[in-house]
View 1 (spheres, rainbow, N blue to C red):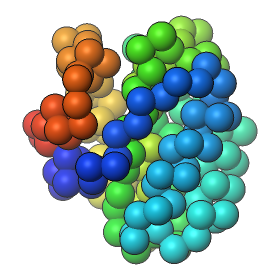
View 2: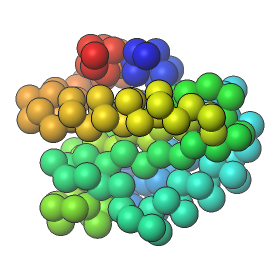
View 3: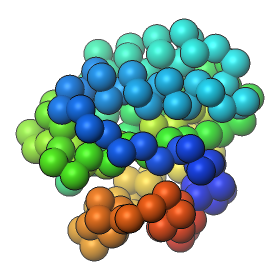
View 4: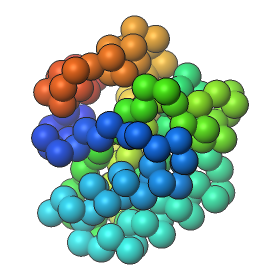
Length: 149
């Protein structure tokens, strides 16, 4: 699965907020406009419920909020980028600069775990994170994510 294909041209968001919940809300709004998502409210609830259990801030300035629900017909994703960073209750206590929000079908367990693993592994690379944060346009961000093998 090519992550770059899961992101459309409106799937890269420059986040200006420093508030975690506001950032999540902006990303939920963008993701729920995708034809693959049939219920914004169910997506919102699933993302926020997941965050209540444990922050999806994995460290390295990265968060991967995700939901697997029946109201998603096909995998889709949006990327949020914050140059200054957002306090996110991440595992390492540092601000988050890259947020990859993923919506997946309820029955796609294997693919879902594989995708989360690939994104996590790739974004642990400091050079990749720097390229994403410093990217000038949506096309270059999508290109970076298309390279995730």
